[in-house]
Length: 468
Image 1: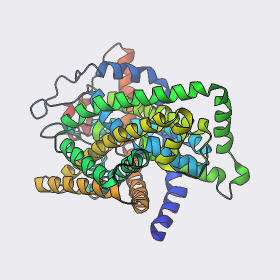
Image 2: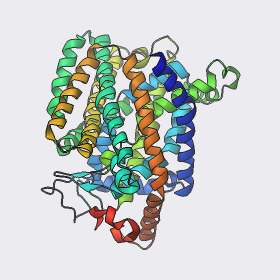
Image 3: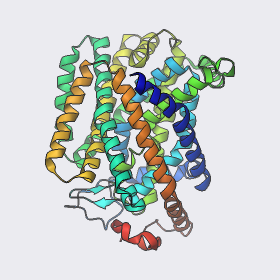
Image 4: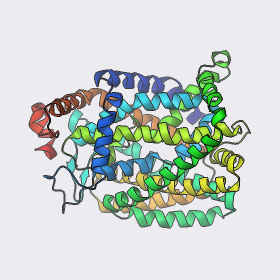
């Protein structure tokens, strides 16, 4: 643990924070602030894709089993919206102070430019699988950069991080929440979670997407309504809460003992865990959508970062800070439960327990898919997929009954390393995503519904064959 903590300290305190912020600023400038200037277009695409039609009508994958942009968004949100939103925010506040919320906002707003680039590249370099499109950082590293060892390294890291480590964290949070609230046996909860998880993940991406597009929006809307209700009840204290967040974020006076430095580190670390912008996970599902132009899915996935951090994480932060119990010594999901119990009684903590069950369970399903698609990148042997499913089930069970300090620390390292792999890749290939964005904007100015053909960027046409 001492070695792991030392690696994490250098990885997160120095290298990753600088790289994430610098790459986010670079892509924000190069895309002319795509995350701000094209917000209206993001919403238009979201509502159109929500109708369930695939606008790339030429797409033929397997037996025409493609998924829509909206379904791809819901799968990525299934992974994003989970423990990080309810327990991770609480941990960030407990350790980094209220100022950590400010830095979560910053990394989400700036980092959404990274999210746009990586998801657009995933669409550009996607390939046709047996049942759906497939893609992600491993694919654009291999086909775009031509470095297979780099691609395999990323594939291994994301499989370990999401399929195994993160899934144990998700089940651990569910088991703790239900034990604290209802006194349910963690062993029984673990068995039920394992059975439900295997029942869903043994299907295809189509089954995962159908499950996610029903559960995620319903629970997200219900949680937002609850948060808005609590904020309305505490509306007079809202200015003080906002002031506390901002002033604590720049608390230079106590920086030596933690202060601003700890707020910055915890805000960015837990913000990245939650919204995954630049991490390289969301592109794996962004590639599966059937769209007429890669930029469309890039824009929709950018919107997912806002949904995750600016809306849902902020809801949790305001609930905790409005309650005034953020410094009661508790951490993680227990702190969120304490806050809701303080505000609206036992019904509040019961609701957050139910919410964390659905949020974390959909994260298990989404996380599983990231691992599967990267295993399929490395090998076509079906027994490896079956072994992976067993391993995922085992980690869900282990997470439910174990203390996971080691798993959290290990996940932080593998998450950090996969983020380094992905950021380096998008810095190399980002010029193509920027050219795609210019092409998209030009077609919109001419009144066209943007459509991409591989001949638009002829020097890589032989590597983007899904767009012929």
